[in-house]
Image (cartoon, rainbow, N blue to C red; front, side, top):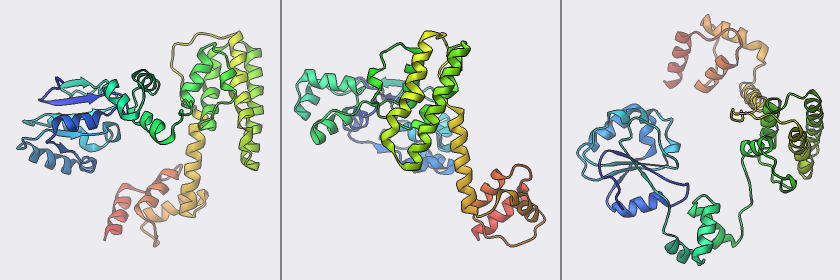
Length: 327
């Protein structure tokens, strides 16, 4: 295997395909970068400062889990004598990557022997799971069954809006996040037709779906989810087939679902504070005047500031209150 031995190397390939196991076995002697180090700038700089003298290569696993951490911003300044392997499920588009290596999966013959399958069966199962060796092993050795066919809400809605595939296979679909699915199709369907009659009929079908959704939650009747699928997704898809417009833009996230989820989050934070929303401005006014004694933690103070629609806690007051909590 001609794997690069210098610089920051993005070692990428399908999820669960054995990338990390292979890399660790190939290198034998190596150092693993703990994700916690990347949570702070100081820890990251200190770690890579000590790594300058190391003769062992460095491995960072599951880059997708840490890419938003502050420590990754220091990768541009890294200067090591050894290779730094960053393992990810897809190719990383970052300026600090100096080389790439695509891992295309385990040897089918070796894998087939390890799970007791023929090479043909092993290859078919790996293709179906997009190279996810781990899921194939679990299904074959532990459950001896076939994994349920599921798709994400966005992928499901995209298929309904853009293709003319038969809907018979979607009748008994396992609905993942049915509210999110409804929100996405509601957000995007007007882009795919300009026929007023079609738009009206789809809106009427959405009304039926909303009624069914209410009954599902009220009576905990999840057996009705198939009827919800018909009204919220399948009927609108059939109506669009007659007057569909081709759209180049990708399917957008459902804003209704996003706003609903955001509303639920705010309601939960208000419950934690035990404060009526109408009282927030008055409470902040007292805080800014330096009056009153309040028993809030740092998270509560940030919640109060975010939930208030007009007045905010002054930055100096907020910093002072948080500093007192640390004592």
